[in-house]
Length: 587
Image 1 (tube, rainbow, N blue to C red):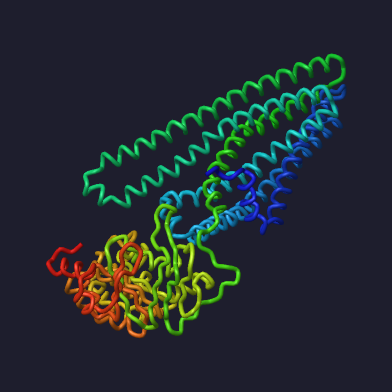
Image 2: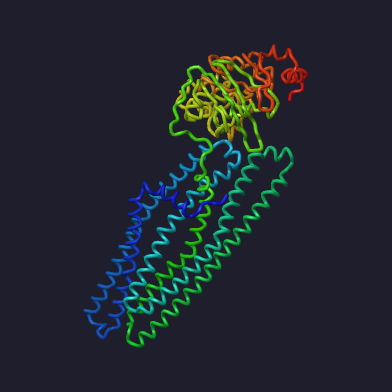
């Protein structure tokens, strides 16, 4: 997929800058006024040297006039200094707001993407792209305000004033500056493809790094340190080569710039001497020309770097803008209503779903779960159990059919209202790197400390929390790494208790618990399931004996259903699974 154009990047930046348009206008106006003030100063230097070279250069009146001219020079430089001094803090405030808005937009937009999006992108790479978008805006905004505008005002203003004294010098200067700008542009465009490749590789490096660190246990377990180092070294070497090439092109551009500036100064001064010898220019004109040449060179020396940084900023921004331009896979319809769940009936009606064109999961799939019914889903891996949960939560859109809760099609209700009415205890809960209290409160964010502690007791979290020095204020580490699998599952159960949703999903909710811990929370789970429609995904069949109904799945279809007693009494998948586990061979 091609990266978005620079025009699209500018549109994204423009949308975020627009709310602050008047503040932006004031900053630009102040910078332009400051640059114009600095450009007026050389005109007074011309008068100064013309007066100094005059026949009455040592008279008292002339000295007073010279001092007056210097005061005017200081005045205009002072105005320029004041304007820039005012513009900088206002610009800092303005762009910090826009950068924060960009990061918030990126954060919110990414969180709204579907599960398949996250499955296809490295977490570390996404984080990098969000941060690079705001920094790209900062580089671009700084370039426009403090490089492009000063260059533009200086070039246009200098040429206009010089043309008043000599159209020949103005024309030659303008022509050579045009050549200077053209060469800078050509080199920058040439360099752009390498900058885009650098940005892509930079994101890949971050992704590989995050992937290896996240899987550090596997790296050690399979003694794969050298293997991972090889992967990381290979991609960083690619980044090094492309970065070096990009830098070298930038330095080549700087060298060309320096050479052209020497030529411009020589040619301008050569012509000026000729015109002076003909009586068309004064000594003061040399001061005027030199003043503008110094101003021009000071600014256009920044031109190559500005063009380079601008294209690098576009390259850095494009990856995140590509994500912002990518439509969300799952969205609320404009007429979406809030889901109401008075009973908890769940119906899958003639559902077709596939993750990819070549991977079909459900075809004409039907399923009905009665209000307050406790249903277990069992079957071999890949039979579709987890997919049912993901579709019910609308992590993916189905291709055909309907999924209804209490006769409301879930595609016609808001995602937030749908998920507020469903509590999930996953097989492998992932926690935030926050305190235990904050992680449990995630099930009900307005819960009091007392409510959280009560839920923790019901989930038997207090058994391990009370042993920790900081208790409920203990931070759990990234993804909850400081806790055992069983402790994380109990926290997930506490969340579900706090959420108290009418539909409950237990995805192997006790799989990480030992027998003692499982026995402790079995009562809590039974209390949690009361008056709720419950779906239990189970591989350990001993945990579902009390279910109202057990549904046996295979290859995306319900092939059998009934109570444990009924299913174990006849030949079939369930009986085979039960016999294997009864003999101690747990799949």
